[in-house]
Length: 313
Image 1 (spheres, rainbow, N blue to C red):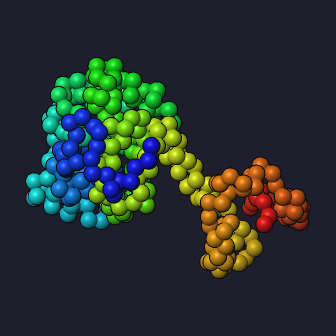
Image 2 (cartoon, rainbow, N blue to C red):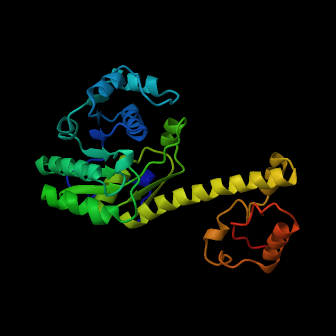
Image 3 (cartoon, one colour):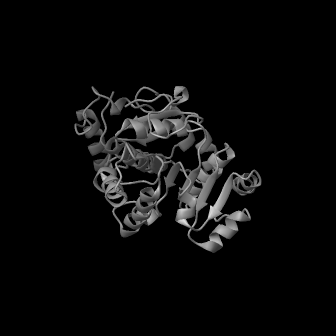
């Protein structure tokens, strides 16, 4: 299921128009607020549902708990253009919306009671609606949650069928605090999951104005890739710690060593180990293994590379 969002002009979703429709954003996280101001800034009528009245009032005044450059100004500007409204009622946010962007609380990004409660509320709104509405889950979910929990619950409670009566997609947004607004406008890749063409087409239409490639996959694949993103980031952070430790132990300049390390774009800074035909990461080259063993036997310092699987060139 592949889509080129920049050339998408029509969709197969019943009742769906490629014109900018009304958007409801549920949640008070940084991601939800970035969604709201970004779509509003691009001309979409947006209602951001925030359950705490005091928080909604603060946002109306341009006050936000997140230290994000330009966000306060965006909050005010979007309201001045009458594109962004803050509401506390879920029904008020959803009843006239064509798209529902759902951000679960950080603690609800799994099978928690909080996520289930939120999905029940969304399903109740779907049951009331006479139009085709696209529901987009934007939070991180553990792989399998869309197929196992989200879609069955929405269909059961709403009494409507996904792909025919409403659309459902999974499109987790990568949020980097401090540069979230810029990242939203210029993503390298937009990951999305859908199990039917109507939902996939509706999401492609919604994202058609954004830069970057839209990667449309199944629910399970999108969830797995997003989890892989986190694992890969974690592995790189662990490597960075090991690299710094190695430089300290050998007494060399970290900057000089890093500059030289990055010159190898074929193996060191590449995806070559993630493609078919790469060396088996479970098999250590004998020379590398011998080098690591000699390092540890030479003195009291443990090898900073001891927990890594390496293969020599």
